[in-house]
Image (cartoon, rainbow, N blue to C red; front, top):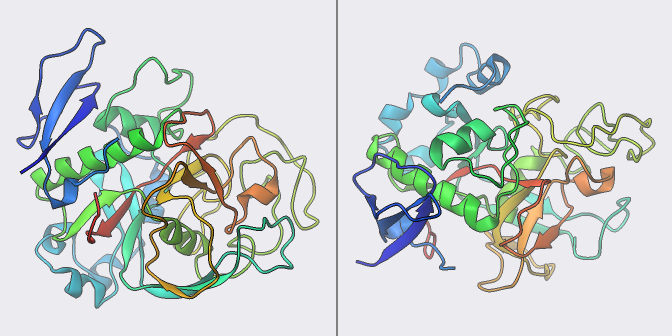
Length: 337
């Protein structure tokens, strides 16, 4: 069995982690067994009440599904065969929306305002359902799982989305969260926490729509956090907040997912690559690359960057004040970390 060494800024009680002595830089190193779910590429308090209300839809939990404790014992096939509740890690205040398997058109039509040439529209089939975070990961959630350090500002609310995280940082958060939840007996068999693939991200962001945004063809800064001086589709000009907002401040999509339009760019699992225009099933991007995909636009950008089809990329080591991430709870596939 192989191992992986991960930097931790605080000690985490977990029998899968063997902590090495604290370094002079003030953090510890953990040796993690390289189980299938940890085959990585080398290299608190609860949410606001309004988010929890969206996370648990009234009168649906008993009618539609069972609590996570029972889902842990179910196979992937059983979970995929029926409607499933939202997934909630209560002690972390982290709610994830269920996204059912389905088909959609990924990319944008040639007529879409503000599109880029790498958005070639093509048919995508997602064969397995997954959960995706209803919000971007917050400062409080990051601090609970990994721990804040000097690169993170201390002036933002604990419910603001975490920024200044690289792709490697975000992936390690998912790795440690998987270990934590598995040890606690709260992980369904055959699933792990990870960054969403680019296709999973867009499938969730579109929420069954084919328009530039999940609510239509226009976007104003009353609907998302971006530079309101540059609205989309004839929408009126609005405010430019010049910073991220607390998660969940704008209306969610029909799945109850917040802030896939603006606020922070979000890391995806995939290396960046051009679409070839062919129909694909469960695409995962190139096997290798130099840049990782980020999606969704940010508080700093104009409205066209917030479109569901918009693709940007950057080196995985990049840490910026307008890049964050949200987690997905996905079936473990061949080659997954």
